[in-house]
Length: 429
Ligand code: SF4
Ligand code: SF4
Image (cartoon, rainbow, N blue to C red; front, side, top):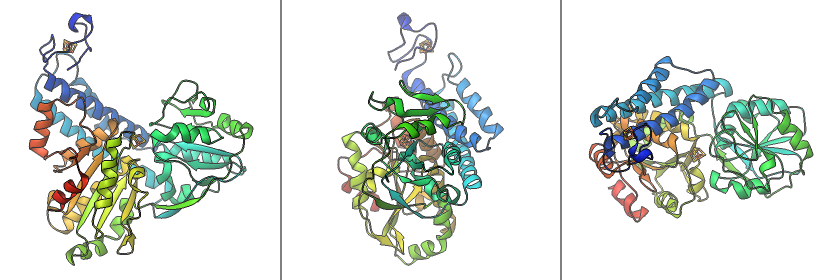
């Protein structure tokens, strides 16, 4: 363990053995970090929801309580800390629900949409991150000009909301997951607006074109504290115009509301044996080679199954043609990482329809994680009692072997095996 949060930190640097000076042991420290990281993720979602006018006093009170439990000399009891972590998962479900409702109220009920991917000649602005209020404000401020706005990374799902996609200045999408942004932003000749994570520290060759909003900031970039995008628009006027690239099309917008609209057909198809399984494969993407596990897994899924994906983990699996099932694409892009709420809502609706528990459904979750919002989502799934989730490519470094064993015992939490096909065969069995 490593803890340096109080004055009595060992030798003035940190408690780094199995037990700290205060008596806190490594497992307690691990669950306190699980709570802290989960709270960070939940706070990010709550922040997005608040910007859409959605708040919940109970959620805010819980954040205070849970933070309190991680202070020095407050809680040394592993069992009660695990309880707090599970409550965090429940509260995060409420936060994701508020965010889901906020997006729909502001931008309309999502529906499947074809997105143009690639650039056209002329002035343009790229916008990345998760904050669609920023996207809307930017679009409104370029309305009536010849400046095109392109989404990047986790902004791709913006195209499923009618109010956003009907905006005349929203031209399409450019680029993939966050880890490729250094080359993609260098190639994009206009300004780039980063609204949230995941933003990389920019190289010098494009740092002067990076603008960030509110709490997001990088060295060399320009931080906008309000919603006035005038500096970005001025930059778009002085930058070299974009050069057209090859165009391709993709389909997004299989939000929970779209899937639930098709529920009667889907339920009947399961009863008729036409659908063998539902997979949720997605979450965060990253640069490690081990993440090919997720693309291998998706490719190995049977032709009579659906894959629901979300988060930037979708970029890892969406290049493959999975074909169609029941007139729908087999790969259903549900949206951003926070749209994990939608995957949960679909699972709960299916369980109700079949009068069974979520764990009795032909449903397998294979989650790629990277940062702290994924921790909050994992705690939500565990708090609902969902078992048999595979999470990877690596286990969280802040979790001790004892705590991981506890989660394995209680929730059958799994790590990716050596071979995705073997793991998939086990799931199907
Ligand atoms: S809270 Fe405990 S473990 Fe952490 S630095 Fe203080 S004495 Fe060490
Ligand atoms: S899904 Fe995760 S890794 Fe991807 S941009 Fe969002 S927070 Fe970052």
